[in-house]
Image 1: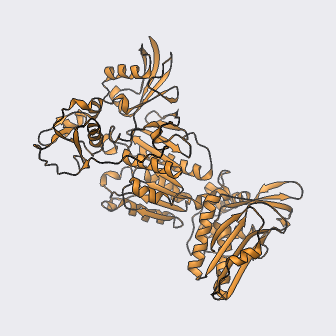
Image 2: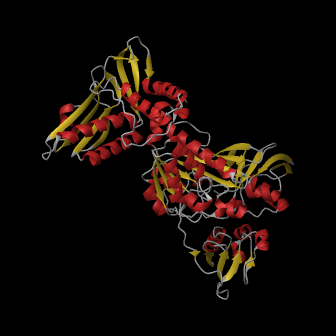
Image 3: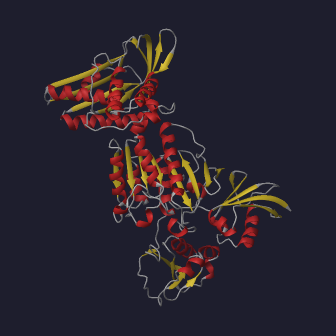
Length: 525
Length: 80
């Protein structure tokens, strides 16, 4: 039996040894870390361990898998205690079995070193004199301050420091020998997180949480770029980047991760490449596809937080519904010209669909292409999303939970509107999400004899760029007010700039029994 | 007639040509107020496309308005 586990009860070493026994193995190596009676000159009476178990178990499992793959051992297992421990108790146990002793020793050493370094576990020491303190966070804050004072060789220094720190902190693991390793075991230089680790809310345990976190960012555009950049910079362990679009020159004024030479390439792949350069420690996983209910459910299952950085309602609702269904936190934002909306949805919070139960709102107001936007506007909202994701990871409260925060960046006013969970919310009721059935791909040189073309754009858009051929202009708002104004007996093709408002119009017409379709991708496609 | 503080967002702000105004209205609830303002400003959005918040909380369209209430009309936005 392989894997990484926590135990609130004292460890049964005989039983644990049995779990890695294997007839094909000729060698078994185990490690026990014990609670010892002193640290830094102070007498320790007992210890308390606390873990962020959700992330810790996943990171622990990753370490076990790495050890098996890297050293070719047969079985590997690690169990760490949580709760109160007395002197002499076993705090952590690692067991490895392999055909030969060499790989078993190496894998065992690798596992305990990596667990100490990477898994978010922290420790409170109770001293004989009655005092107590969380050791890791205090030490790392001091270490961080120390490392900021030395700017030369800061990569190696900070990492070296962290590594030694992990071992210096290892006082209860009586069997380990402090070692001086100038480089990460993977040979990768790590960035310096000291500036954020100084913060009380971060510290060593917060940094471990950030490192253990897996965040899926849907949309690598105006909102997604700051989210991805800040989260990669912060050291989020796994970053998923989902975007089916290629970079357009018109994106560059607000999507500052990219360069002119990148135009035409996949945004997800570009972002992955640039984020890896920013922070090689981050495992960046690109998904070159548009978000749908189906692919989101499969992909989001492997992440802890989902961030909506898309530019259309269909994707926003798909993200919201998936997050609610999987009980994962979602951080949603969107912009319109000089304004933005921000909403954090955690388990039990009102979600996007509690506010907008009807998911067919696509295009009732324009996206960035239709409405225009100044580059810093999504930059500000995306930065706020990155901040909210870090708050979720660090367990910090946020006023963006249970509310929508509206920002008017022209006047720099913000407003928090409290929301309530809707009793009949389709997302919370697990109702199947609405599917698009009316998107139609047809040529713009359409056979107008067969279709009555309804141009649902606003009058000023129609004036600038009228549709070729015969069409009837009815702005979307007017059409939704009274879809029955259009007589039956016709086939209606709704058209707008990007295909989102027209989709809403076609759905509204279908609901009142009209035959209707939407020009997929819009007139400009 | 009651004095109400009204705030507009997104396309409503654009169409009203202002972010906020104080409105003297006899509207009994948020729905009546929106219909009144829609006629005045030519808003293209139907009520069903909006949410209303009264004094910092999302509210039902049937919610009554009291003197000096602050009413915010919010269309959903999706740019990114």
